[in-house]
Length: 171
Image (cartoon, rainbow, N blue to C red):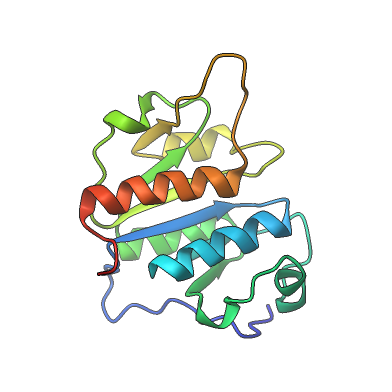
């Protein structure tokens, strides 16, 4: 697995001390990954990529997607869902799934420090076993007649709300 310029998250202790984290489950579109990683870098939030991706995941792919902050992103790649779940079991953190099938509307959901915000693949979301692993399923409310937001936009909206609630924005 190539590492390129990415800095992998290596916690000093089993529990990760980041106020918030973001994870992408088997993303399909390099541009959305690039945008999400840029958002994570700007807010100082570690990011996780649960592979396989629907594109070759490399420095070159992300640079083409406009990810000029790659060297400043704190990214950890997981070979598959099982590897991500093993890491999460060691690190701790509540898994909060952003989904159109969510039960809790974003404006009323209470985020906590250490939450891991998970977003699914653009084409298919996440499978049932991933839904089942989530402690919470959160929905971003939209006007009637609209299916979903772009995954990178949804990541930014949810992350901003989570950081606002947990006072995690950089000063």
